[in-house]
Image (cartoon, rainbow, N blue to C red; front, side, top):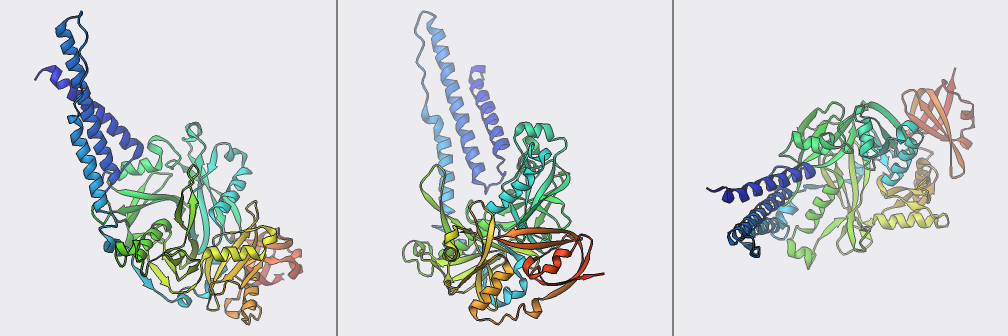
Length: 555
């Protein structure tokens, strides 16, 4: 075969391989037949190959004809045959066809069966003994503000790093906290610091509304790094065939940092459905990785079945039980999780987004969200509680106001202050399903706590602390509080490491931090004897939900 005939194919192959290599390295798609992104890369690689071959053949033909006519003749016109585009167009059409065949229109029942939801008893599952210290009321925006403020005080850190906006809600030694790693503040900051890595992360306590910076060994493989140290790309190189999503930061019970990614499988057709089959854990310091199946996931890992996916799966379950056409027209028995509408920055079109809160329960983080009919009224017909580690999902049939109505009711209680309510969580108060939330000022600072009765959302109370708010709420319901129930009251002897005095909405609160880093608080006006305490003192306290009832100095 003549060189002129082979050359177009050589040029086409080289160009196509360069294009495919760049796409694989930049976009890191899973080398998996169920990954539609990989199919499109293949389709466009074939398109580029055929187009380049066609162009090369055309240009060589022009050159050959022009040479044959002599230098005094006009050059021949270039001709390109669109026959070269037939194969890639067929491949692209096939990809689109398979995608359509895999969608909910043709597989409604299969989509509805992905999430297994068990009806459960609210009072039994959310016992009042869970306590308000297990409720994560802080939204991500407030966590970001506290984390940025904490890092802002560390001049040697803030000049080189940012706090990642991707906070993860986890259970840490039985308490809910939000955690976020630091990010390199740009390419050149990565160049300057990559030899030492990132030396810390931020924890935010959503109960005490406090943040702290924790140091660790240098984290090298992180999402904000570049090239092979980018955590996404590093995991792709290690596990090229796995479809990984939801890469996020967590810490174990000893405070050691890790990145965790969910392993996803498409179970309907080739591209349809989505379920979690396990996770991959990355040690960002050493680069060591470990893959776990769902049944093997360690207890310290909290987020594998992530909230957005659970909400999406529940919407399939709630709307497609009676077929796709029913979900569009009759909508009989169709339900969905609570949503709000958000506009893209450069687009006025609104899109529904699932919203949910968090509860720390049995050493795991559970997401909670209301369930409402698809008709768009302002009431819930029930609630969904789902475990982010195991995927276990429970449904509670409780009718009442939806979360947005409860937030509006809480804001209306103090409308003269202009406070904004965070997305609430759900608690059990003496058998009454109750929303609890924080009210923030325009600067994002928490000013008050609010409780709203789910079934009668005109019953609203607000107070400066969680325990005080709940006590007022019990009185509004006519429940005999007798101060604090004996079964929730605990006693403890502790040694004080430090004491903080914090002003909240005009009231001074005393915070005791013991040598085990546990935090207990009390209202100064009701516990004046505590004003005489000093670091190093040993005290005996009685408390409930980390709120001190009595405090006696020992020695």
